[in-house]
Every structure is written in C-alpha cells, then in structure tokens.
Length: 115
Length: 117
Image (cartoon, rainbow over all chains, first blue to last red; front, side):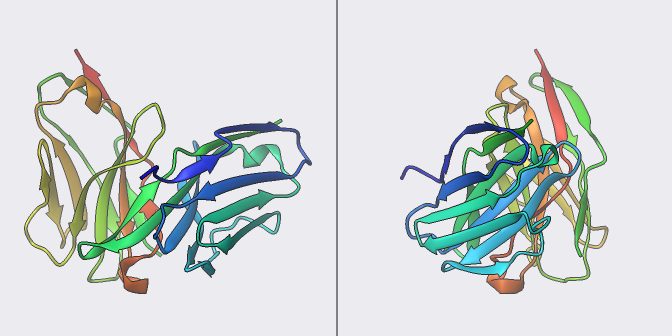
C-alpha cells in the first residue's frame, strides 16, 4: 500500500492567498484526521472524519480554516485567507480497526510557509 | 480535557547505552490508550509502541519498552542499546476510549533525543 498521501509536500504563499492542502487516506480506512505542528503549540488535532462525516472540528482555529471529505479517498484542508501565523506542518492521518484497536497512519506532512 | 506533559525537551545518550524518556498525563478516564511516536528529520511520524490502560503488563517492542504507572499517570519510554538511527523527536500521545477508541491523539511537546557516537 502507498500509505497516506499528502500534496503538496511544500507550499509557499503570500499572506491573504487561499491555500488548499490535500490528503488521500489509505484505501479502506474509515477515519481521517488533520493535525497541525508548530514549534510553539506542538502537534494539535484540527478535525477528524468518520466515513466522510466530520465528527469533531473543535480544534479548527478559526473560520478561515475549513475541511471537507467529499468521498472516502480524498480530503482537503483550506485556509482562506492565509496569515503568517498559519505557517506550520500539516499532517493527515487515517485509521482502521485492526487487531483490536485503531492505529493511526500518518502522511509525510505538508510544510506551509505564509510570507 | 486531557493533557500530556514531556518534561525533557532534550536528552543525550551514548550509542549502545540505555535512555529513558519521561511522560506524564492528566485524565479523568479510566480506560485509554497511550503511544510513543518517533519523528526523524524526515518528519514522518512513526509509531514506536502503544499501551492499553486496562493492561497491567508493560508493552515491549524489541529494544523499546515502557514503564506504565497508571496510578501515577506516568508513561516512560526506555530505549535499550541505543543506535544512531534512534536519533529523533519522540512524542508521547494519549487517546480517549470514547468513539470506540478512534478519537484523535493528544500529544506532548516532544523530547529531542541525541545519540552520541
């Protein structure tokens, strides 16, 4: 299996621009998670989906952030408008019930830089 | 809300020696999952070991083992026979049993492990 796929791997954009991060979970996984990693705040859960339905979005920092999962094989995290404080590594992870518990598999992350 | 604390921002160990990374957590739940993840410079998050809170036996994976003290809410990671490839950031993580155990993870701030050759 190819694992969780994220694109792009690096994104540099100017403040005020719209940014879209993409994730393809592992085939058959029924949960998908978006995390953000910064030096100041560490790794934080932003939102997660079960069977394409958002379950908990309490970690989404503000209305500028939105996430969608239109089908089982694709999710997006959009920031509009972007700000320099949004600079971070954004991870997508997916999971499936296996051997008695859910294990999360992480993608390689997208490094976002907002100038 | 649960919190996870890693009090050692950085640790250094000689190659082939043993090192222990500390983690404490705060929760009011009686059943939960605890994890250690490794993040090398490639930034890929790699699961090292997991522990179910209802299990008294400490988890072990080859050179990696944990010391799980439920009453003290402590979950330390011991790495034996340290190797250069163990150099990375290590994150302790907590997951609630709600939602069938499929909730998101709460992470500590991490410990940067340096291996001295």
